[in-house]
Length: 91
Image (cartoon, rainbow, N blue to C red; front, side, top):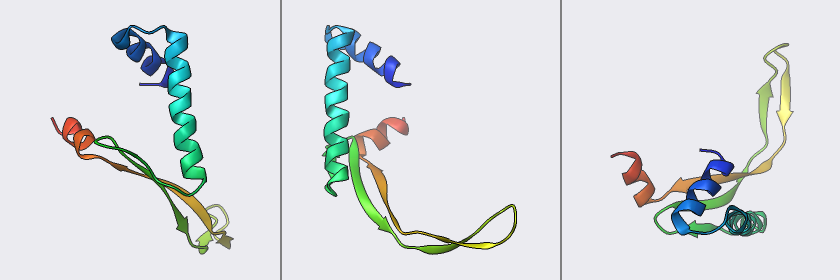
């Protein structure tokens, strides 16, 4: 399911217009993005938790040349699925 299909499904289920549904979805995604960018967690009970963690710098290898390269440290976004989501996937 892509974003357009999600908007269509939510609009149909909630009796909202597609334009209103898209605005709501964009607001939700922006709020999650802002929280993660600030280093906070965004928790949707039953669905899951978005969080940020640090990945240390490390040595890597260029697969084409075999040369060692230094991979810089960076922040990565993690998602941990909630119980309801896991249960739904296992039905």
